Image (cartoon, rainbow, N blue to C red; front, side, top):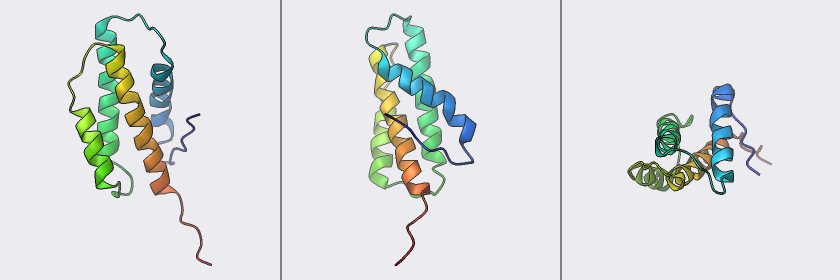
Length: 108
């Protein structure tokens, strides 16, 4: 299960997006209007783009950034699939950010 550890800076900002990601990835056969799917995908896209700009350490691996930018450049569609394609990207960015903000183990 996805259990990110938000930094003290992010804290409450992550909560709504984490809930949205969980909900989107749990969809089986959702029945929403196309504009609703598009809005959800837009929210996830915008948040992922913000994470790319403010990664906390400025040290996300370039390959991760390229992949994320590539996936975000795909046009938004009013479909569940479009929203579901963006949700794992935000989740992956959170996980990588968490790894970057973890304290390093003490030297022996």
